[in-house]
Image (tube, rainbow, N blue to C red):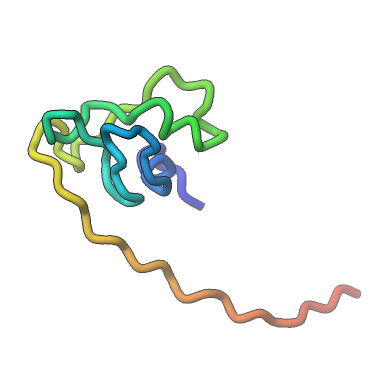
Length: 87
């Protein structure tokens, strides 16, 4: 289970018309830099973070530097369904 707030936020595309950062990338400012915090409209898509006032962009995303889309991470192979017997 993902517990890092920034990973939960980045699992969604930013709905802000000025940003529209793809899933897996941090939000950006109108000047084209990585935003210091995620847009409210984006982190409120995550039910666990709706009560937060802001979610800061972590240092690993280099806030304040020039924004560029990060490569999309491949998800793990889907689990093979199997039968489970309960006695």
